[in-house]
Length: 365
Image (cartoon, rainbow, N blue to C red; front, side):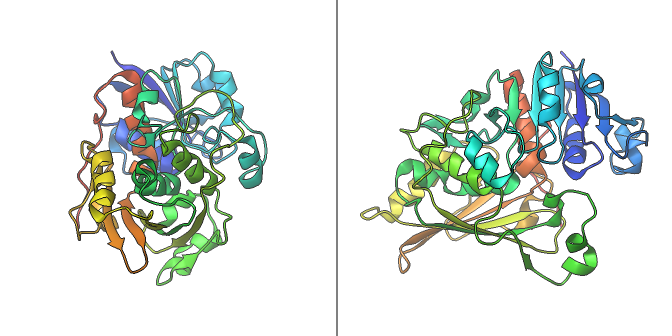
């Protein structure tokens, strides 16, 4: 069976990356691409690298244009997807790459985003540990999927094994991320101009203000075996219970690379836990995974190693002097961080091979 697909926000970075991956997918046909201010223009004018899709023209983003497809991807700015999702009730599968359907807590949404709160959808991070299982179990036969925030899924995948196994204390997490500007979208902003970022590293959203913080706390709370709510649910909003004892100091730093996230996350070691038990927690979590891989002891990833790949590479260090575990994780923010996670989740929901149209291999140099 061939599934018809519409992609909104197709002139942006996330939309373009979704299209790049779907263009190589044998089970889908990209029929419709939409945009707002760029509607009426050729897709190739904004995504000139997508040569196989050069025949497509960007249409207006309206419920009427998006309706009538088997699958709709929404790659819109935060707060804009919700106005369309209610009107797509007859669409068999809708995947939102924005934040509108990620959070289960309306209070957290109000605190970090504001505006209308929309019901949470099934969270699109298949490898994430949830209540003693994996998130992919909830994605099977899902009809509404919330693709993750790139920073949020990177940190969550970094630390969820330690939280699930009870070998780290989630009450004192520190994460510092080097991130590329493509994660901020394609709209023109002065602080993202090349003259502003080249030769410089610039922190932003400092002091607990980054919007991905509640998403991380929600995911890590759900990783504990006793947790009955969290990323796996696509039911109504919860009160955010279970996250109170998860505290994270989260600082992203904009660096001059177009793609990539290098996240360095640390957390205290629980008293009495051995080095072998710590490493075993991560090996058990990801030993059988294709796209999330723990590197050999003493090895740490570079962002260059995952460029263009749907791969998260993790390096684990045990710092006994500081009594902390350090996890360094590299992802391509546009692939594993966004579009790759969306397509991987789509494959699972449709009962297709999970790896279809996705690669573990990066591009080098």
